[in-house]
Image (tube, rainbow, N blue to C red):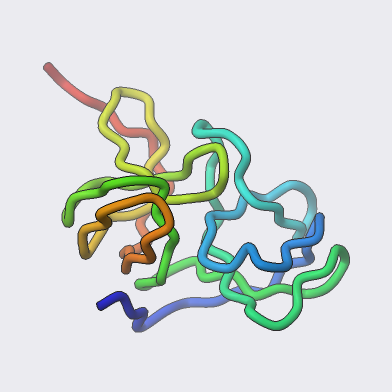
Length: 129
């Protein structure tokens, strides 16, 4: 049961029409401006939480800390490090150099599932073999 708690929010300006993009990772694209992450290497500033406004140039609310509901891009195990895919969805990050933005607090079974993620970082994952 995904939820969010102790969430820290910040207002940004939508750099594009973000209507229908809630629960996706967003990146900073300019001064106080965000857009949905469009590459797996993007550094997410947070997760878009607006459900009622998101036209380009409008103020939008982004979760930048705490726990938040995020749309998954595929199966994810609870406890996995997560970051963005090329569509702003959460995916497991396991490779050296991956950008991490959270920890999955619950599992996702498939693309489109909404899970609770504890926002951390962002940081670059270092895997020591």
